[in-house]
Image 1 (cartoon, helix red, strand yellow):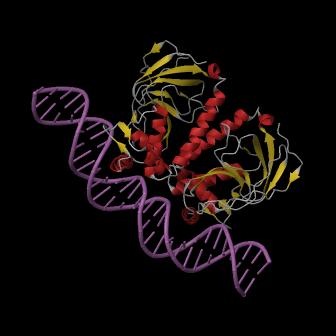
Image 2: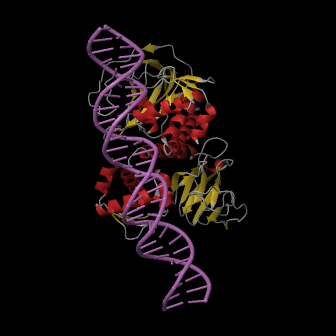
Image 3: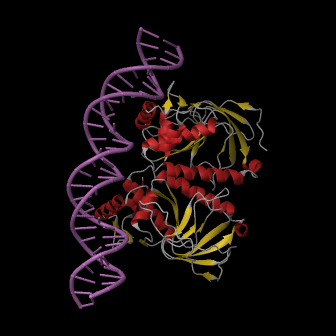
Length: 218
Length: 218
DNA sequence: CGACCATTTGATATGGATCAAGCGATGTGG
DNA sequence: CCACATCGCTTGATCCATATCAAATGGTCG
């Protein structure tokens, strides 16, 4: 089984990206070091791997949140998925990644050579497929449905409780749901007005009426 | 390797569906028989398997086209993918299907027990994941981009030539792209006006300017 | 021919994007 | 400690792409 290495490596500060497109995806952060079997500490927006990089590792989130994404020529960004503590990611097929992976905020990640997790590969790939299929379904729904679905999904993944802490900023949610930040924000306040949720702070969400959210989620 | 059985079975006419939702998904067709290792002949819109059915087979398209889909409560339908001759489908993880599979038009399909293709499972699953990821990316684009992308994708899968025969009706294309038939139709005529394509008939498409399509596809 | 279905075309409505401004928290320097 | 810039989020006003509603066209099969 997977074990967590005790090694800790500060992210290297080599290979800064100055070529990032303008629109919403414009970070200029150090690229994370790739040390097999070790635990990497990542700063906000640090890259773990990049689109087109060779695939030869699998990663596990120890703390924080990781996102995978692809950027279109014109700067539109699509977030493939969010990975929370315990989740494995980096599982793609072929010789190179079609997504890049980045830390949403400070995070720790354990890196494995693919061979080390070969017995889990099957389950991993299946989980990935299932989630991507659900993502497709989400993208054909209306804005309130997508946001309600997102909240239910996060609630389910984080805790059994009714209060959740969204680790990602609005822009990430928007890029995951194929909406704009303004629309995401409006949907949140709309849900709040319907008292389906409460927003003690912008990142903290209380699910006050799951049934209403499920109804929206259609 | 996979071999094509010579057995031919007419689709059974048991288990007609009368409970189908109203909106665009309203077929009332016989459900296909499931005979292991055999070659099934399917009529238009015949079901091959249904959402929530137990997963225990893998299928290969011999002739015709197959679509996988999911239907939301309110009747909105999402097509997961189209499968053309030679393609394997039915590959999902878990105990039951999250999609149903149906013949787009008359089709022949060979059925295998999962064990028979276990060595291909890995590649299959990977291909499926990759295509689903591309589908997600497609769904965040604009209507002209989606349609251009769809045509390029089909052209690539069918032949090296510049003329393609779309086996599926506009409604299926619309449900695949998350658009309406009207919008799909308008995009076709728009592409025709830009002489990026020609439409000798509504199902036959000549790619007259792939570069223009690729530019749109962004 | 005439019924039926798929597709196209046209007119209008609308959900979400875009553009622009306001607001609240956090941090920095004087 | 307080101006004041900065950043992420929210709110408002307007616009536009695509949906919706409705009708015309065309193709197929009896």
